[in-house]
Length: 323
Length: 314
Image (cartoon, rainbow over all chains, first blue to last red; front, top):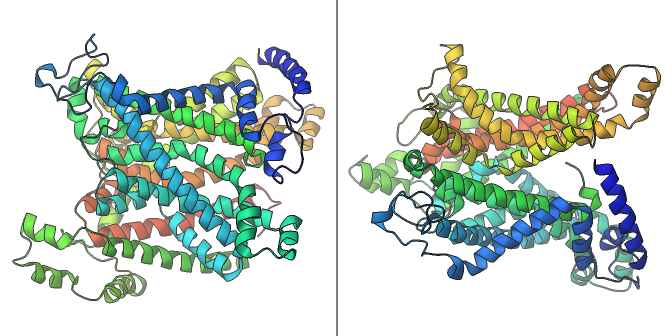
């Protein structure tokens, strides 16, 4: 079933590729030295999206889900029919209706509104944590890999210790002490993500360090700072992008599980994990949609980010392929 | 082999030392004061100072740390809970079988499902069955287990008048009744973990099936079943085992959530209750015990490779 279509599409794509030189070799190009006079019709970051549409349809579906979520998050104030904390005690536990498309909860709050704002919080925490985490992972990974020696050994034992914890236990411990808040959870998730993924970045930095262009830069008199910033860092960037995109779904899921236990984002802010939470379990027997919709939203989001991340990983960094 | 084992065990010592420092520092240098809560909310002692002295919280931090870690290393004493005054190790040992059973059943469910579907998918690559299997794996990956657990608790009770059993019975008392309680949580947790297992199984088996010795087996005239099950599967299992091993911390972390949804009296619930009451010694010791288990498990997994693949030697 697939083979015939794949062949037809493959041939058409090959024909297209002839007019777009280098399109196929961009995966390797992204990893090799930054543009050394290679003639390329599109920059690699644009090329990745074009190739994804063609060779990774599921990744494209994931991308659409992520875009919808982004749109909902950005436009929440305009598209949400009610306020996220707007209660109406006369309209408690309403099933789907024209005024409340997805029904209302135990305080008469509109579920659709809360889902839309939930997307905003999820993305806010997700992107925030990933931004902090990527910066941290890069800093630890590049410095540890580049300097090597005793410093590297020491840092890596610290990372070992951190990774010996089951992630949820450690995060729960920290959050219960800090207290639930949007800021706290974003920073804590970011730090956890950063430490965990510094291993991957360090691995790449170790490889890049051995290239002769680094040696020649050093020989030409570049200092350590210049060498890391101008020569190591650009070659680590594709890996960081991959780690960040594949990590987003995990971060969103972790935020949801912490909020589920009441240690993530505090009320009244609506989060998908918080809406599913243990505390609201009693109401769900009366109104099962209170559980169904947030669970669906969360699954869709995780699915979208997973597919997008997988596709980007395969396209950007073939070495990490698999699984 | 022996030298490798000794080196790994020696390497575990600094790791566990750092773990203990990390978890201890977390508990002491962060806001939130257990003594205030115990005196004001529950009147454990007449004054704050008296309680602090009682719990040893008025001593310098490094003395507290040495007291805690010294007790563990020298006497195997993991301390007592602030609130119940019960030895932590006893409580941990009493609850651990619940969590262990949950984890083992979960792994069983996820491995059986994942490996079966993975084999079918790989053996019939690009067939309709393969696509179905892959879509199922992606779905399983996307559904958060706590969301699924909530749905499993709530929906059947509304529509079929069925509820999970809430009162826990130990396996040693009544195995059948115990399994009735444990199977639902394990199935929920296991199904959502089967996705990655299936994907690894499929790609590993596809990889192995393209190797020369499999071609030799085909040309000897062997049937498909013995080739896949006897020749290919054993080698393809290595990535699966390392995945399951890597996921064990996830099972333990997840047990906090699963146990609190299904009200199972395991280590996860013990830990979570201790957290909400800021019971420092319990949180510290449970974290440390579990981290030690994870380190030990990683070693066992690494050693198991040598049995699965004779080419790997240490």
